[in-house]
Amino acid sequence: MSTKNFPHTSKDKRAVSVPKHDVFHAIADPTRRQMLQLLADNELSIAAIAQFFPISRTAVNKHLHILAEAGLVSCRKAGRETRYKLEPEPLAELKTWLSFFEQYWDERLAALKHLVEADEEPS
Image (tube, rainbow, N blue to C red; front, side, top):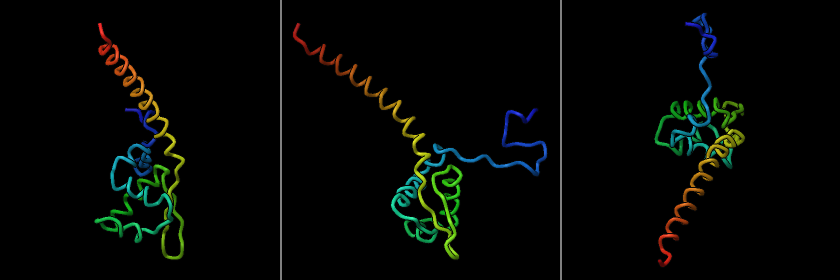
């Protein structure tokens, strides 16, 4: 089987890279969504973030890694700490996708309203 259609694979097994997570995968987990909300106004360390969740710092780090791979957070070293902050630009992809469905439901609800009002008119 050819690997040309799979850019994250290689014939040399030592060179296989892990594909980055997309925004939709990153926000699929409720813990990661909560982390994004926490980071909306604050740059926080892993230790500070972990205080808000009933999970280990290792688990927090794994969630932050997924968010970082999706481009939703960035990190910087501050002494011995790594501090994270929200990078909202990738959320525009979500907004675009959701706006399609917002328009879809607006149209469907308008059609339903028209149908109901037409049925209520006296004969």
